[in-house]
Length: 315
Image (cartoon, rainbow, N blue to C red):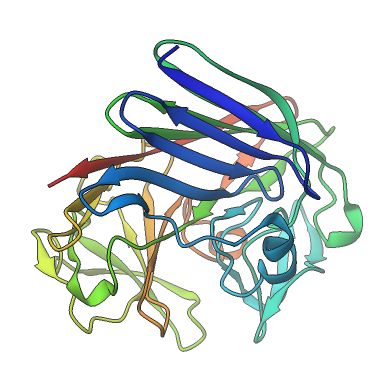
């Protein structure tokens, strides 16, 4: 068999390893948060993991809110102004994690997902994780189920598909995304970065969108990242979908991030340590529950699907 899927249940949460035995490429997924903790490939320097992850599920449990590495962002993404929103003539307040005055990064970053299925054949390896949400006390009194499907296939390709089903009796607001940090070398300063967005979302001092989109083409062609600092959202307005590529010629690695149309926004964040860079596929801009930009209103029984793809290449 060219591919394999194994589940380690010895720790506090199952750890799933998807492996391409032929190309020695593998992905490691924690059921805690359904987070991607490793995406590795063999290079001239040995096995190289391009995900800035955790040392163990226990480490993830204790430190997930310290950077939200690889976190699932749902049912809202990034920041929500003052943690408050109105929907269908009712007012709600999120009771989860705050950074300053903003609720951030949704409600599922620390959720215990269940392994529903896993397997492998000659063409790929996969795992499907599930979480059933019904926590009205968190300020989101809408029931939904979520399945996260990881598929590792040939050419060092990892596809992530999130499926959300409104299982309640009323419509609900929804945004979805991911928060992985990538490290292709020793520092992001050496990265060559390109993404095809032509618009940047204007933020205020609290990183809340103003509603304006500004012209931005700084990285429409490859540019050395250098000392660039970003904590910004970019839109697909003017382009079909946002593709992002980062490469490090020293490590000899290139990563292509290839979302489908369900993720028309790209959030990029540079942490102060500059050892990795967060590149987040989003279905909406931040604070979408209030500004409505990209917000999905899912009807009862409606199925919403979101897909992005990571592909590693050797230079």
